[in-house]
Amino acid sequence: MLRSEFHADLQKLQDDLLNLGSMVEKATIKAIDALKTRDLPLSRQVIEEDDVIDDIRYEIEARCEDLIAKQQPLATDLRLIIAIMHIVGELERMGDYAEGVAKISLAMGDEAPLKPLIDIPRMAQKASLMTRQSLDALVERDVDLAITVAESDDEVDALYDQIFRELVTFMIEDPRTIQRATYLLWVAHDLERIADRATNIAERVVYLVTGELSKLKEIFP
Amino acid sequence: MTETRKGLGSTTVPKLSVKEHAAPGESPTVITVNKLDVHYGTFCAVRGVSMKIKENRVTAFIGPSGCGKSTVLRCFNRMNVLIPGARVTGEINFFGQDLYAAEVDPTEMRSRVGMVFQKPNPFPKSIYDNVAFGLKVNGYTGNYPDAVERSLKRAALWGEVKDRLKENALQLSGGQQQRLCIARALAPEPEVLLMDEPASALDPISTLAIEQLINDLCTDVSIIIVTHNMQQAARVSHETAFFMVDDDRAGYLVEFDDTSNIFTNPNDERTEAYITGRFS
Image (cartoon, rainbow over all chains, first blue to last red; front, top):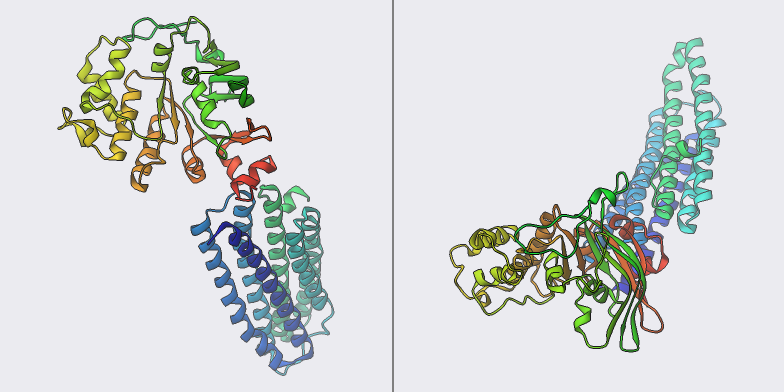
């Protein structure tokens, strides 16, 4: 492979990573919609589609490995490939969390959720937005946007704490709600982890642009 | 403070105490270059190079063909003055002493700043005589067999040649010949070893042997290596200097930094363009 093809391949790698990010974002929203509307076939679809996400993750990793072996990338090229290898892993795990939400939905079966779902869909919207913004920051090499993503994580954490307190109150008041409350707690936890991983992606963007790898929340508390 | 080295006759380049040069936590400087220009006749081959080469470190010079990296290297042991019409201006200090001062004896100085070339160039003599030659030129009066053995061991060649020291050096393989040339350069125990693409004519296994040798030698020799192989520069060197050529075909220094910075996050976009292959 010639050097000119290498740079085209790098671009293609980034494009495919963005497509994967879009799939993960959709999976998250779909999993929450299915939970909210009790659409069990849609939950099953999210679970099936996660296999595709997993396959794409390993395919992108293999292409990164191939480029490193054959092209000996340096500087920005090297940092981009390293960033992609980490980000693709983050996205794949986010897909697993969406799958986790879908599995909880199936476990709940025909049973109605413990309470109307308001804060959980809000969490899902925020986590998905963070995912999209972290990838936009990657495309634009935008450190400021990456920092915004890290700051948004605090809002998701705050929502999680609020949901946690609310559900624990349900459980204390009526132990018969424990199972249903626990289901929703797991869902909230999955969404909180998705937001954490979007922050990890944002950290990789800062690394790609500056060469510095740091915990964004420690730099911009 | 000066010291005279033993066994090499008179030493005209005074060796200053390294402590006088070293800032806290920094390696001492062995060669200081200040505003170096090199002309061949009216043609300016190198313009305005300033840098500090640190002691017992490996410094790599990289850059496209014609960027002056070999020319700068050859200035460090006054090889350029052998080329008719060559003119070197600016300062090159070796442990604080002007390398181009009239009182400096070039032969003696070259025993302290050794050189290894791209193509192995052993003399058509025995393996032993090749190494002993460097000592004889400098009037060495010590134990020759011991000095030859020591040099061959330092060049990681002793085990392969110890039973055939009287054989002609040209019978050795290319990689062995290059290590013999390194042994020859090491015999007078130089402080600096200049290597001009020392592995580019060798196969990958011999190349790795040379790189290992560079790594082993730099504990007590300062090494400056010119290489076109960027991966080699990244593997063997501590500091890297990137040179470029301007519109008048004069070479100049773009960036000089820790090798890890140069190859992962260079400061200058011209360095970035060169090492990522986006150089037009």
